[in-house]
Image 1 (tube, one colour):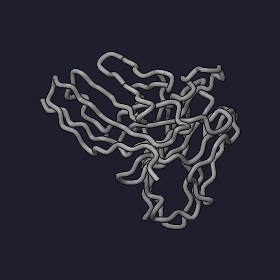
Image 2 (tube, each protein chain N blue to C red; image 1 turned 120 degrees about the horizontal axis):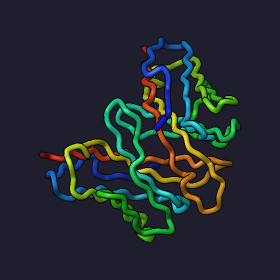
Image 3 (tube, rainbow over the protein chains, first blue to last red; image 1 turned 90 degrees about the vertical axis):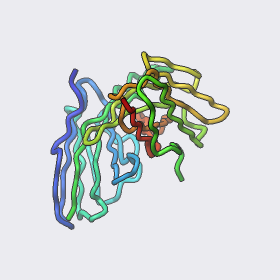
Image 4 (cartoon, rainbow over the protein chains, first blue to last red; image 1 turned 90 degrees about the horizontal axis):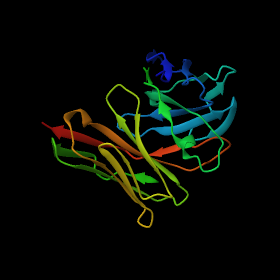
Length: 119
Length: 115
């Protein structure tokens, strides 16, 4: 079965540079989530999109922006990179069935992550 | 403020025995709970879940128990196998926006199953 694809898998940038991370959800999934996992930490929610519209926002810095495109893939744009941005960035996708009481809407499937190193 | 807590950073279990991983939460708005398994250099893999209207969900060797009054859930793996060795994350969710069910994770428990 097709899974969530993230690219690149590894990225090394210098301080103050920009980075773009890409996420391709599971086919037919309409919702994309971005999470950041620092060393030894739990994944922290950054932002989500449903049907190409931002649906929720977490602890995402103002230097970061994201969008979901017409083919449902999503990109996370990171500017003025700081050393503290070094982390694993996960994308997850889900299918929002919109049926009352259908808890499967909650189930998110994660990609392999992009490891960003800022030097 | 950690809304989902996994108080045991690590757990070692003998192959064939039961592994019990625990998770506590503080937010009463959470209505769905999930367990993810994570290997190094890979993304979290969905394992099993439970909604707040149930107290048990079973899938093969994996069973999740939910005690709403205690705001506690646990994952039982029986029998444990060496391939189960991984970091297990407990996650909780509440609908927070149009079509959004962001997950709040615990810090994970590293399970080691000893052959």
